[in-house]
Length: 97
Image (cartoon, rainbow, N blue to C red; front, side, top):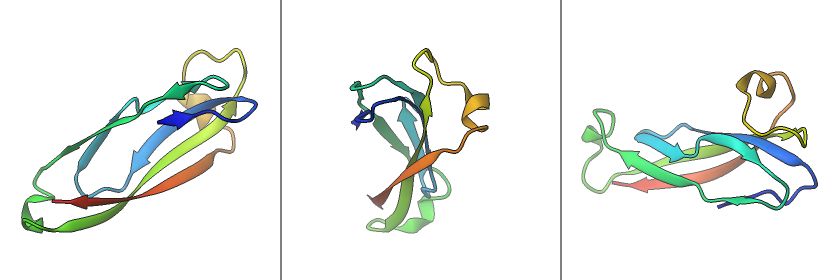
Protein backbone atom coordinates (compact mmCIF):
# COMPACT_ATOMS: atom_id res chain seq x y z
CA UNK A 1 0.00 0.00 0.00
CA UNK A 2 1.41 3.33 -1.00
CA UNK A 3 0.17 6.39 0.90
CA UNK A 4 0.83 10.03 0.07
CA UNK A 5 1.64 11.57 3.46
CA UNK A 6 3.20 14.71 2.00
CA UNK A 7 1.57 18.08 1.54
CA UNK A 8 1.85 17.79 -2.24
CA UNK A 9 0.47 15.51 -4.91
CA UNK A 10 2.88 12.74 -6.05
CA UNK A 11 3.56 11.17 -9.44
CA UNK A 12 5.21 7.77 -9.08
CA UNK A 13 6.63 4.87 -11.09
CA UNK A 14 7.72 1.36 -9.97
CA UNK A 15 10.82 -0.47 -11.24
CA UNK A 16 12.80 -3.58 -10.23
CA UNK A 17 16.01 -5.52 -10.84
CA UNK A 18 14.37 -8.87 -10.00
CA UNK A 19 15.67 -12.02 -11.69
CA UNK A 20 12.12 -13.23 -12.21
CA UNK A 21 9.52 -11.54 -14.36
CA UNK A 22 7.84 -9.15 -11.94
CA UNK A 23 4.85 -7.00 -12.75
CA UNK A 24 2.85 -4.59 -10.62
CA UNK A 25 -0.56 -3.01 -10.86
CA UNK A 26 -0.50 -0.04 -11.04
CA UNK A 27 3.05 0.58 -12.31
CA UNK A 28 2.66 4.36 -12.29
CA UNK A 29 0.13 6.99 -11.39
CA UNK A 30 -0.76 10.11 -9.44
CA UNK A 31 -1.51 10.03 -5.73
CA UNK A 32 -3.49 12.93 -4.32
CA UNK A 33 -2.75 14.26 -0.84
CA UNK A 34 -3.78 11.67 1.78
CA UNK A 35 -4.81 9.12 -0.86
CA UNK A 36 -3.85 5.43 -0.57
CA UNK A 37 -3.23 3.02 -3.43
CA UNK A 38 -2.64 -0.71 -2.98
CA UNK A 39 0.11 -2.09 -5.22
CA UNK A 40 -0.29 -5.72 -6.31
CA UNK A 41 2.81 -7.62 -7.46
CA UNK A 42 2.76 -10.63 -9.78
CA UNK A 43 5.76 -12.94 -10.20
CA UNK A 44 6.20 -15.11 -13.28
CA UNK A 45 8.84 -17.79 -13.79
CA UNK A 46 10.64 -17.82 -17.12
CA UNK A 47 13.90 -19.10 -18.61
CA UNK A 48 15.92 -16.85 -16.26
CA UNK A 49 14.57 -18.59 -13.13
CA UNK A 50 14.38 -22.18 -14.40
CA UNK A 51 18.00 -22.96 -13.46
CA UNK A 52 17.81 -21.54 -9.94
CA UNK A 53 16.70 -24.81 -8.34
CA UNK A 54 13.84 -25.74 -6.09
CA UNK A 55 14.81 -23.75 -2.98
CA UNK A 56 16.80 -20.92 -4.51
CA UNK A 57 16.53 -17.40 -3.17
CA UNK A 58 17.05 -14.29 -5.23
CA UNK A 59 17.73 -10.94 -3.56
CA UNK A 60 16.35 -8.03 -5.53
CA UNK A 61 15.15 -4.47 -5.15
CA UNK A 62 11.85 -2.80 -5.92
CA UNK A 63 12.08 0.96 -6.38
CA UNK A 64 9.32 3.52 -6.25
CA UNK A 65 10.46 6.73 -7.96
CA UNK A 66 8.32 9.77 -7.31
CA UNK A 67 8.10 13.49 -7.95
CA UNK A 68 5.90 16.17 -6.47
CA UNK A 69 3.23 17.03 -9.04
CA UNK A 70 1.09 20.07 -9.61
CA UNK A 71 -2.25 19.93 -7.75
CA UNK A 72 -4.05 20.00 -11.12
CA UNK A 73 -2.26 16.85 -12.42
CA UNK A 74 -4.80 14.09 -12.99
CA UNK A 75 -2.64 11.51 -14.81
CA UNK A 76 0.99 10.37 -14.89
CA UNK A 77 2.98 12.14 -17.61
CA UNK A 78 6.25 10.29 -18.34
CA UNK A 79 7.73 13.28 -20.19
CA UNK A 80 7.35 15.57 -17.18
CA UNK A 81 8.59 12.82 -14.83
CA UNK A 82 11.91 12.70 -16.72
CA UNK A 83 12.41 16.48 -16.63
CA UNK A 84 12.31 17.08 -12.89
CA UNK A 85 14.42 15.72 -10.05
CA UNK A 86 12.79 12.62 -8.64
CA UNK A 87 13.16 10.86 -5.31
CA UNK A 88 13.50 7.10 -4.85
CA UNK A 89 12.24 4.76 -2.14
CA UNK A 90 13.93 1.34 -2.43
CA UNK A 91 12.51 -1.85 -0.92
CA UNK A 92 14.58 -5.01 -0.43
CA UNK A 93 12.85 -8.06 -1.90
CA UNK A 94 13.73 -11.74 -1.40
CA UNK A 95 12.08 -14.22 -3.75
CA UNK A 96 12.03 -17.83 -2.53
CA UNK A 97 11.57 -20.23 -5.46
